[in-house]
Every structure is written in C-alpha cells, then in structure tokens.
Image (cartoon, rainbow, N blue to C red; front, top):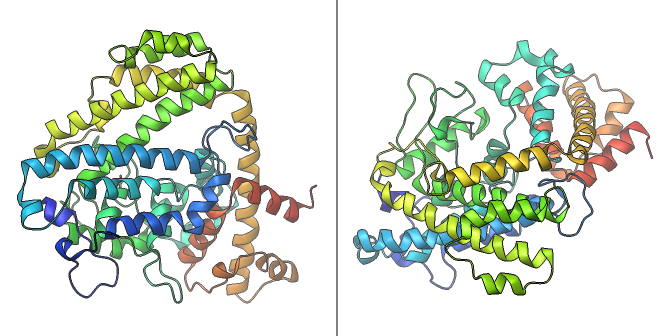
Amino acid sequence: MQWEQLLSLKRQGDKGKRLRKEQDETRLGFEVDYDRIIFSSAFRSLQDKTQVIPLSKTDFVHTRLTHSLEVSVVGRSLGRLVGKKIIEKHPYLQDIHGYQMNDFGAIVAAAALSHDIGNPPFGHSGEKAIGEYFKTGRGQMYKEHLTDKEWTDLTDFEGNANGFNLLTASRPGIEGGLRISYATLGAFMKYPKESLPKKPTSNIADKKYGFFQCDAPFFQEIAEELGLIPNKTGDDIGYERHPLAYLVEAADDICYTIIDFEDGINLGLISEDFALEYLIKLVKDNVHVEKYKSLVTKEDRISYLRALAISSLINDAVNVFLENEEAILKGEYPHALTEQGKYTAQMNDIIKLSVNNIYQSREVVEKEVIGYRIINTLLDTFCTAYNNKFEDNASNYDKLILKLLPEKFITNKMNLYDRLLHICHFVSTLTDGKAVLLYNTITGAK
C-alpha cells in the first residue's frame, strides 16, 4: 500500500481527482468529514446511548457521545504523532503531494468520532439482541428466503457494518450519505470484510465484519481507490486494513480500557485502592507524587492518573505503529497495536477487573435484560408490519404501526433482505430513551 493513495480525498460520486495541494487550508477536506459527522443526526443520538451503564442518569458516567468525542481526541493525537514521523520518513508526501502532519490527525479524528455511530441502543447487548431475534426468535421464519451471507448479516448484526451504512448509504436527494472522504472511510473500517466466512484467520482484521451485503459494491470501490490489499479468494470479499484503522482501534482500546475503569471507580464499583494499584503501573515513570498528594477528592486523584495513563498508552501505540510501519503497509501486521505494546499486560489486568466489577454488575445485567425485551418487541412488530404492507396484507394495526416510523424510513424495499435490514437500521438509530418510549407505546405500558 502507498501513503499517497491511502490518503485519498475522493468522495462518493466524484468524477475527477481531489488533489491535496489544491485544498483550501482553512477548511481541509478531512476536516469537512469531521464536521459532517458531528452535525449528523446519527451522531447526535449517541448522547442517549449506553457506553457502560445502560439508562444511567449519573452525570459523570459516559455515554456513547462522550466516549466518541474522547476517542476522537486521542485519535487525533495518535494521528498527528504518527503523521509527523511519516512525513519526515517520506518527505515526497509533503514536497510533491502537499500532505501535512495534521492531515493524519484529521483523518483519524474523524474516523474515531464515528467509530460507534452504528451501535444500537443498550450497548453491545443491543447488537446481540438484534441478532438473536433472527437466530432464535420469530425472525427465524425468514431464513429460507435469504442467502447465507444475507442471513449472517442479520444473525450476527454488527455495529461497525451498520456504521458504514449510516455514513455512506444513499436515499432520495441524499446521494452517498454524508459523502465522507475515502481515506476517512478506510480508517473507519476496522474489519474490512463481509460477514462470511466468520473469523477465517487470527488476523485482527478478520475478528468481525465491516459491511453488509447491500454495501459490498461501494466498499469494493473504496478499497480499490485506496489500494487496500485483497486477502480473500473466490467470491468472498475481504482486504487488509487501511494503516490508519490501527490508530482508530488503538484510540478506542485506550479510552474504553481507562475511562470505563474510571467510571467504575466513580460509581463505587471498584475501590480507589484498586485504581491506584492498577493505574500506577501505567504512570509510574511520569507521576508527580507531590501533585498527586495535593489532590483532595477521589475524582480529582483518579482524573490525574487517568490523564497520565492515556498519555503513556498513546506514546506506546505510536511507537508500536512506527516500528511496524513497513509490515502494516505490506498487509503483514495481524495484531492490534495495544496487543503488542509495553503496557499490554497492564491493560489486560484492568479490562479483566472491569469485566468482573462493571460489565457484569447487577445494574448492567438488569438493564441489558430490559434491552433484549424491548429490541425483540420492536423488531417483531415493525418487521411484521413492514412485510405485510409489501405483501398487500397489512392489518389496520400494521398500518398504524408504520405511521410510527420516521419520515426518512417510509420507503419501499423490493426484496426481503433489504426490508429486514431496513427495520434493523431503524431500530439501531433509536436512542435508549426513545426505544423505551416506543416499546411502552406498542405494549401499552406506562
């Protein structure tokens, strides 16, 4: 892979080239990506979507929105630090093409900002709930009418693939969705493969999938424009990662490891003594003991350690990336950056503690149970009504249900796969609170 190709400013529908040297420095194309994402309704909905504690009203607990903003900030730092070294190593990128250090930061920041934009309500249990409606619920009735890959798109519903669709899917008058640059879309794509085969290798890029069958043609167009390396045979579609996707992933790994841990401490699910024991391993080379001792509140002490820990992990991820740049460009680096760093063991210890004390806490489990019931009910109600309408067999109740769909979702889909995925897209865009209200409306609950 070549950096000048990987940093493509092209957007969906472009007829000609967008050259970096011709960009307006006051509003660079990669910065336009960031602006379009942050002003989108899909991004705004993240303010009421679960990060760790579903439906929590505690003001210091992170939502998907605050998490995404923080991941973007860390991603920008990662991109700039890497970009500085890449430009120094490959000066032709600047001299001939006009690329700057901050371009790398802008691309990673925009991709990181949108990394959770496709996640359904109720956290990762929301993805599982959608999948299980088709795998074990009433949605099983549709299996015989779909291809294996279409069926897997539904039974293993994936927030990353849903995010790609939200960023790129056309609708009447809105061609190409948000029309994000191909470089940013490439960096967004942590898993550049379709839903089958599942985990064909131990390569981190094969861990999940990144696009639905309906989006495969456009994804391939992006991959070819960027010069990504194909790594699948036959009719299967898959590529090695865009190098900057490693930085987006690292930003997410750093934030959810450290900041979810911080939330757990502030909620009282993890003691401050544990925090000191675990975090000090990440910050012992940088901590100012007198500064730490001067902090009066637990929140301030943990905030100080968190900031130092994130800084340590950023520098470590940058070092791992630069040491392996050649292998990454050849498509020969099958690891996450945080799996190969100086602090991998320490991060794994923190994640293990968070799993036991936060992710499996009673409050989280109870709210996830509620989320499963809500999503199952919404999918069944709307899939039934939507398909009955297509088959000209809609009851009065079905017609009333379809009036609850937002205007942009009132559209006809001609095949079953598109109809089912359309309803999944609708449910996935709901906030936690809106999903509860809609469930209460349908069930007649208070």
